[in-house]
Length: 133
Image 1 (tube, rainbow, N blue to C red):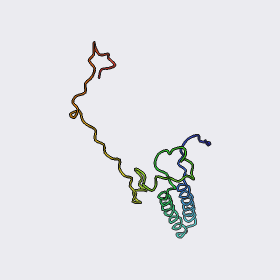
Image 2: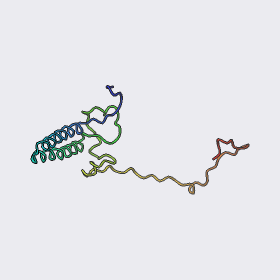
Image 3: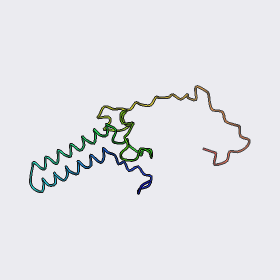
Image 4: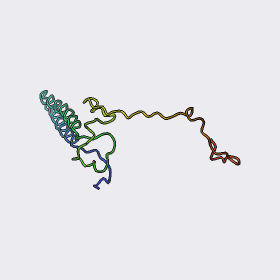
């Protein structure tokens, strides 16, 4: 347990790498804007696009994480995501990468017509107010 307790903060190799590249890109773009250099501004923008692509590639390679909290054993940032190869549910990055998790099998539940109406025990007196409705 760390300083933040038992919370999944979502830190991953993909996230940290992408953030580092994006910060460098923002710095370069800001320096280009302050210096009036179109080349430096374009280089900063290119670094920010590179940050998106590198983060996406690392996510698809299993260095990201699915949406939502992970089990405690998978929370450290250096643990690979074993479910990435099949794709994450509701993940735009996985869908763009051509990975779609298989839908769960549809299970049909018999209706009341199949078995007839439900039979309940006969009551011997008035139904209490809490049991009504």
